[in-house]
Image 1 (cartoon, rainbow, N blue to C red):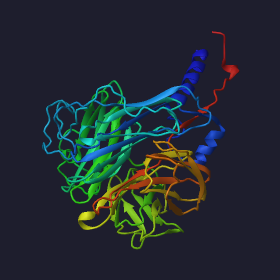
Image 2 (image 1 turned 180 degrees about the vertical axis):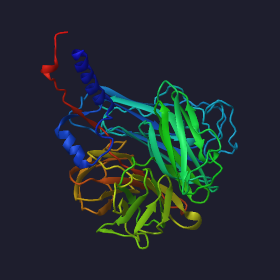
Image 3 (image 1 turned 90 degrees about the vertical axis):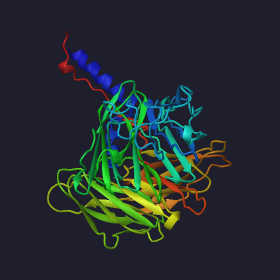
Image 4 (image 1 turned 90 degrees about the horizontal axis):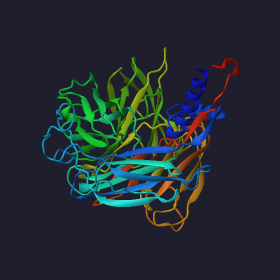
Length: 526
């Protein structure tokens, strides 16, 4: 029996190195540093990423960019990285921007009750998309969004640590007009998405993608300013194997809430979840999941020319949350006038309109416990940010973002329009920013920066030397306090300030593997 116990310890250690899920799922940078001293840190050996269906619009195009950073200590020969189209469980159902009224052929959802859930048929079959040839050099491709499917990707060996894929869609006209971007996400079993809406001027679809060979059972729960929104249909969704299912949130309830939170949980299996939010007047963008519930959160990268910012917070604990609101600007952290604090009732959302809170300077929002007796309540949060005015508005979302423990990467940066934002909520931090070679060649360039505690540093990232095409930007925390980051990509067109913002949580490219120990006194001969 004791030999079996030792075998299980070895198996658990190997599993941690393969999956990369241990030791990097939360906590502070100090916790990560302490953990590293007690364990060996190894590169992950396999990564999975899921890209949602971009759009069904006929006046749109999508750029995909894949990248894996070069890392020391990783085998220079073995491995591969590629994406394959996901299957659709329906042939003629609705997609954001469609007009079929939520009709379904009975193939989607649980017991055929889809209520506006559906997908697009995936063309191309088994043809791989964006296979990488070498770490350190991105690859890119463009497709018509009307025919672009959701993608399921895997990377192993030298391509797994830090593998990232960026999906950027431009919609020239109609519903959802604007620039919609998202970093393809790793599968998980639990997602919080504050900032969703069931209001009549919004069409919010949550895209559920199952990467595995068995069906996933998923629960969707909506919460608003008065608590749980009463469901009007079965909130349990079946996502078939290696398939994607988009769900129109307004079909889940008859209640209308402009500032809601969506909780996605997988009862069986694992999934990727992201919301495509489309405003009839202010464009749209992807709304990714917030960082896991925490008592203190950071929302990095409010543009300096933001004309409005709306904060949505959900209290995930059993007690109400009282939060102190601060704006970390280029020089210091201040309290926004009239919004010194925010009270959020347990199990409910609260929203505040901050207006043009940055006043012409870039910034980040910091939420911390107000104080008082008892433990603080964990929350999730997101910002809805608007640039432009009137008919020339464009919208993007910034979720609460986990700190970069070691490194994080944003792919698909352009020679113009990329802005990197870094915020150090507490102690001053030192970071290294590396621009990769371009997809069309060139040489990488690295620069080191200091981010003072309580401030935001917004900068145009370095560019590759003599590089052509999209490139990747990797942020490495070298020393100091925790750092949170985001990247804005702006592409103005026809007077509309199109933009999208992607958060940069840690890439989980390495995992702390504890050393297996043996207590020989417990061994026996049987």
